[in-house]
Image (cartoon, rainbow, N blue to C red):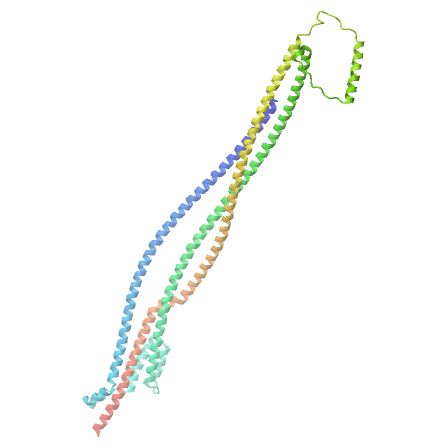
Length: 479
């Protein structure tokens, strides 16, 4: 009996140690998760600090760029005003020259020159058509040799010939000037377009670069979170499996203990009944007043016939026995009956104490088992709830990871397309931007040379008029 109790106690201790080990494992897993999340929080704090530093540097750079942009806008505004003033002055100069030529070529001016200037002075002032053509041709060829413009070569060719009049040459010059002005306007517009597009594309590239960095960091954080959640879910599954095993073992043990208790209690009750029956039988002889008649049982016909037959046999057999010897104690009951009954009572009391102890032990074991079941059920429910939450978080993190990777791929494609667009922009714009001032200066000089050539040709018209007039005067003197 003591061996069984010791065995049961050892099994209970073993189960308790298993439960403690499971709890310690759970605590260790939770502590590991805490340390992991603490480390992650530290890394995030460092990243946040780094990003704040980058933000400060970006703000500082932005302030510098804004200052440079404001200064550039101011300088550009000044240059634009200066350029507008130059164009206005040149236009006024051209108008003044045209007005002067028009005044000098007027009929009134010619009549005045006839009266006020002598014939010899007019002959000295006259300029031949060939000389005028040569002066204009020299200007045009000089510009053509410097700028390699085929239109200038065409005008030079027209001036070098003698069949094309000055009116057609002047028209060619004016068309050339309009073409140069249009080319300059196109260059201005294209330069502004290139500058704007390059600035916007550079800003877009920087923004896409920052966006890719953010998405990479988000992907890394998601992957880390997924790994952590998978580890935590695996730990919870192991804990639940261990807990279920411990509960099953505890249930089997409680079942075996209860069956043993029921069997022992039945045996002890049977022993009590047997001892009570023996005591009652002794009381019938030694203490008739304490004797209790056993309840009468209804016998069947077969049992009554068998009992009557047995009684007849016993009576007949009793009559054949010799009479007992008579002695001094033959008429007295032995005094040892009280000792036997006392011993039976002692055995009954000890058996009752043992039965009561077994009952208390059974109740305690059952209460401990029920508490263990309640605690295990609560623990399992908490683990299952935590696992459900972590599985939901894992599902969300996995979906977010897939979505972020897709957006990262789209951003990467957009970045590559932007980089290709930037390369195309540079291929188109770099030469224009680098040579803009040179081309602008060259066109201005070409226009200036053409304007001078046009002015010379306009003066040639005036010289022709003066020559015809002077010729007629000279012929008049000769007459």
